[in-house]
Image (cartoon, rainbow, N blue to C red):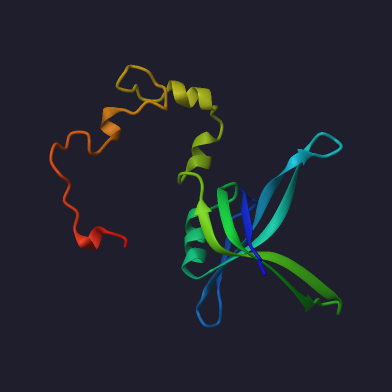
Length: 160
């Protein structure tokens, strides 16, 4: 059996971080995921999916993502139910995230408010060829460009 969900969307509000009675961090938020088609009125349609993240990933999510942030989620779909205050059974569906990927640089939303991309490109620093084309690499961007010798790497630096 397979229960896997992969989503890319934007947060509808800041993540809500709480801690369980045993001290385990849990963050909840809603992810707006655009549909591939438009509705009868020609407007884009979106699904609003509840996401739950646990432990250190929950703390990182609460610290680094906010309303409007673009995020990639991988996890499993979980359903549940509880009895509401009026005595009726309420059913829930959410994605329990195994992985949350931050898909924008930190502060990307703040930098784009009120400015268009063309203005930002015009104000960008000039590259090594005298253009502000963002796809060109400047010499200063390559930390290994001026290193003529071998790079020393210790065993402690390797992730495996």
